[in-house]
Image (cartoon, rainbow, N blue to C red; front, side, top):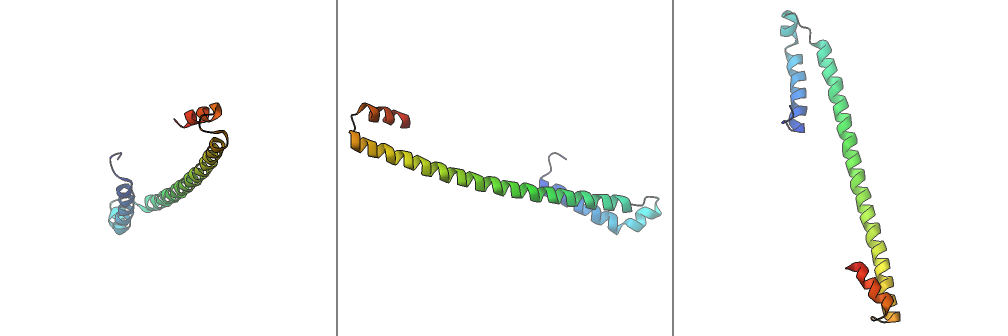
Length: 106
């Protein structure tokens, strides 16, 4: 079971439900009523589908949060870099403070 892909596992569950529904009379005649198992599998499948939807929504939110975080960091870095350039122009490239700032980027 661990080697099957997620989609194959989902297909297997759906196929089992269909098979049990299609062969319900045959199974009942042999002494096994699959009704409860069919309903249980349907509930479990619905729960798995809901969990998948929640996972996809969380993934989308995480991607959006990452995008926002990266944009904010880039903007903040640009502000700091612009300030460093301004100070370099103001104090001169050889000033000790500017030399120290250059080390921050290396």
